[in-house]
Amino acid sequence: MLLVERNHGQRLHPNLVCASDFRDTAESFNTVALHSRALHNAIIENSHRVSDSVRQQFTRELRHLCSSMGVPVPFLPVPHSMHEAKLFTTLILTMPGSFDAEAMAIEWCKHIDGINLFPKLPTHLRTYHEQWARNRRIEDAVKNMGPALDRLTDVNEEHQLPDELVPAAAAGHNDEPAQTAQDDDDVLPVDDGDGFPLFSFLSLFSLSLFSSSPLPRFLI
Image (tube, rainbow, N blue to C red; front, side, top):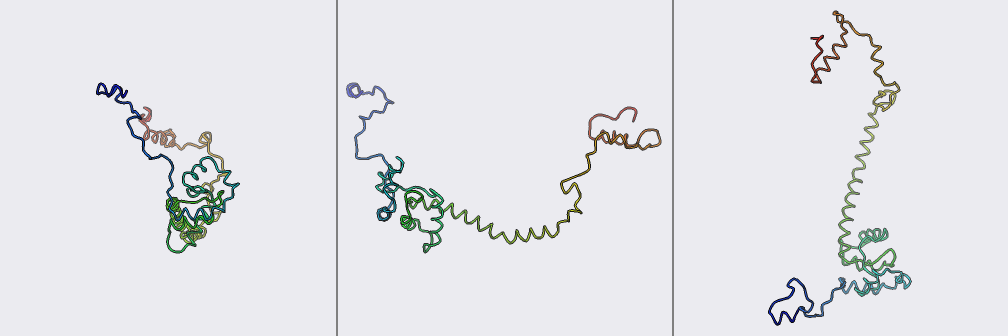
């Protein structure tokens, strides 16, 4: 293909990408370390907390992260386990000052074990802090509404009617059998004076109001 381009001044396959058209560089495509030197030193200092037997049980993906970032224990997002969620809350409440992801990431390394607790990047902690703060706001709102909900429950119980005064239909149970169509036959009709039952006329008139069919001829 290069011979055709040199001799004839045109490419044989214009849409084909050829690796020979690009020069090799020292650039590599791989997972690179994203943590600071201070965080790296903190992981090395506390690497003794993770035994060799635990490291041998790391999956291939975890071992790849360790080798790519040059750390004995890989960085994993929060929360990897419930132990990490509890540790995050503990550090939030015990560390001085406001939330500092960089300082917490270094302090976090003092608790790693390679099983339930793994090192964290500051970006992992910042992302989880947003979720944690939202959950705390919800819990505080529910807790603050507790006295008001208790008062509302007391008022409802105070003004609730006794069971013996609640109608059967409102109480949700009715011991009387439902009225069937046969029960209507036992009702005596009322004569309107012309020899036609009054209740039948009213029933037919009601039906005519809700239907498109006219009244029977013998009623007009």
